[in-house]
Length: 275
Ligand SMILES: [Zn+2]
Image (tube, rainbow, N blue to C red):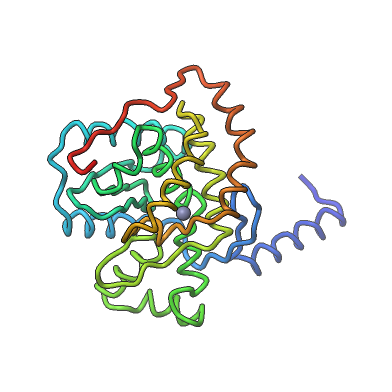
């Protein structure tokens, strides 16, 4: 195939643009410009390491019905994520903290302490789909790339890649929303939250859970935030702007839910000894 002069100019222009912007990508849903200094392969490798570290630090839940419930809801959400290349794994840990995190590669860790806030399967689907959405949009990688961990993006990227293994793990944990005793919780930005809400509510609707539960859950979480420590709220700051944006996304999500063959509504109620 031969290019004419105009096609050559276009091809060279596109190649130049791609070369200049090897760190550029666009966020799903919003089309927002994202700087990304790392490959997805690097993210997957870090995700697996952080998952191992988290699981080794925590005690696995012995509550079999809850372990099975997490696996059931998680796999339904994972099926909608369109990432069959991920090795999805859902781990419930015996902890009172209110935390849930999804790491690159589909590794999900949820603490028992957040389950009473979920109230039912659909509430848990809100949490899981929101976490999965942060991973699909590569928000953790973006945080590491943008230098939100320290003041300068270049220093931040160097500080992560050159840090000793323990420091590196802590920094990567912070970027992916893990709350640990050794680090300060780092809230996602509002634009990242809005994207995760929009993607998340679609995932849960496609999985057969009533998306209206999402607005109920975030309101409940915000109210619970005034009643003591709430690790999940610290990382995923909820406010009226987010609630309004979520309401705006609800029409489309309800359409996805209406098209679902198997509608689960709110699913099974969650009863835990911590309720
Ligand atoms: Zn979030």
